[in-house]
Length: 150
Image (cartoon, rainbow, N blue to C red; front, side, top):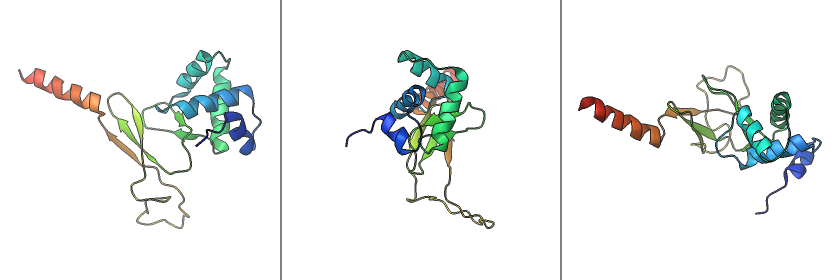
């Protein structure tokens, strides 16, 4: 399946295809680690493009409002962004190192979870965050426990 260029995706979403928007969308599309804005800036600059801190925040939010990016706000962590949108997936987060990975919705179509009572809301999305230790941190934790017992 051919990949749609960031500029085309921006125009299809009703946004002007500016340089900063194109490069930030490209960074988010290629990222698998749900980058924080400071990481987005670092990656944009590594591509030789210039972007200010404020412009990076503005672009990420413009992409979110246009449905091209998703904002992930985890307790105790900086805001992260991803370009995977529209599939109502969830996240696994490591309590130790903060690594965040995607996990498919467990029950199918959005919202894929039904609240016990909707209080009159028309629910169209559910966000689930699974917390635990990633394999590397779990392995390290097991080894730390072994050392303290010896």
